[in-house]
Image (cartoon, rainbow, N blue to C red; front, side, top):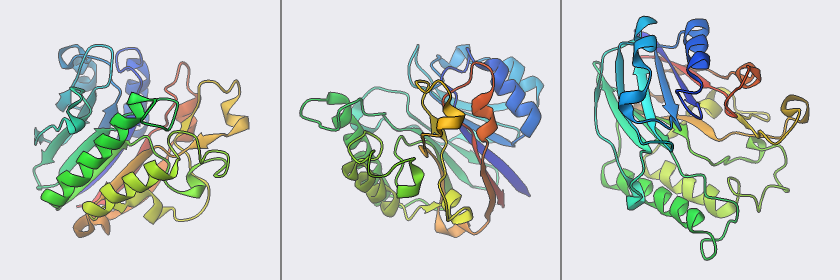
Length: 262
């Protein structure tokens, strides 16, 4: 049976619980992967999600920072959680559906403001995290898997509002783009969103700093849906729900969706 999967950096699942509930009610994905939950697992508001049919959850959390969760209408069992770069952060959770498909939900470090690991520890952590992802995929090449999340990198020139202006801005620097490409290549991952929408500017994040983010449209595609080649052809109907970015007290990210006929 086909299922629709969504990924969304929610920027506090407790603060934005009403938005999650509205999204689940309006769009009804079968699976929702959340990043930056900023909550211990036991304080994620599961009861409200369960009432809408999302009875299954796997998650990793910590107080006030990071955190990843997979909410699902479909039965799902935890399939591991990696602490890449040994940061001690809740940045990855994996679940496995009854049909054997594994879902990896990642929240890659943002990397701070300066793209230089010698003066910015956070940028070094980001690069190390991506290197560990690459090495993990080399060690055990994934199969029948989907990878989603806020990867905090906009890889293509048309994934940012101005390629030349952002070449020295964290999230679009050549060293980050190359690091992400190496991780993607190591797992033979297919960029499902761009397979469906190959041409044109495409963004999933707009800064809070822009007073009129919609008109300025200085966006970046930081949120991704990938799949292994053995199931990537089953993906279709990719879309980014830009209007959700305009809801009251929104996250600065918009949900990204894809449907899989599996």
